[in-house]
Image: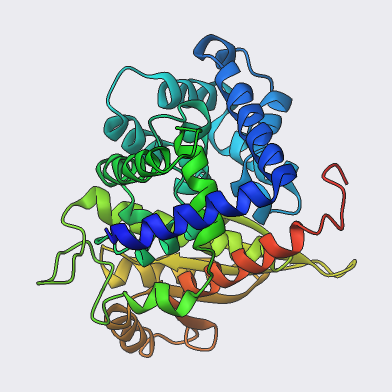
Length: 369
């Protein structure tokens, strides 16, 4: 870490707060209120949550600023897991006795619709002396401070990496205390990082991506690719969920793992109604492993639904070329089949995420609208 650069920014942040006393008081009160609220949700209390309690608990997170209709997002979260199952997994994640590495990976694997930003914020605001907040801005700050091997994508943020980066932010918090900042929490460190290293340079974020990277789950030499089937599944699910989110931001009704025809359950669907004329659907299949034949068969079955206007194969460049060549020989498929590189999916998602968050912070529409 660039210690001198860190010290400079900590000193600048302290000077800023000393000058802006009202802002300093507001930020301090805001942190205390957030910590008090999330700490109040004990394991026993989480088990007694109603659906509306879950909404309040989730909707208060900064990570939810990207969503205009928070009720829709939380309702989908409950629907996909089931209320009782979600409460149990949340309680185990927040208050479980296992290491954070184990709890993190279990929650990531078993709960759909909650990514690292939301997970880390819950942990930080419940256990503010132990855990950091991870999001795009944390990436920008730590990257500028010279912290190496930062996760670019959600699938790269596993429990081990989260624990490692929480320790990095503990070092930052300790340095803040040495220089006179009184709040010892990692939440306070997040405020400093956000203020001093604010940036949203998507080009810089994605410039770290390895050009030859694929999403097969096989580790290529010097690419830092996942070695296990579980990691390959995380990539698949992250891409699938990103496609769903993009659809919602574009105004579609979007779902994952949806049956669109007999024998065809696809990874993601965008759906829209057109007046009284019916509906149109766009279906997406993410290919990280398995045979091209099974992908083609599933897409052919999806094509049998007359509402389906386009079917999109999503993978890395190498696999997309194989799918393109294979599908060219199949009558009736080529006119509806489109191809989308998963790296472009992530870039579009990051751009729309930033735009949605910026617009929603204007509060043009009430939360309960």
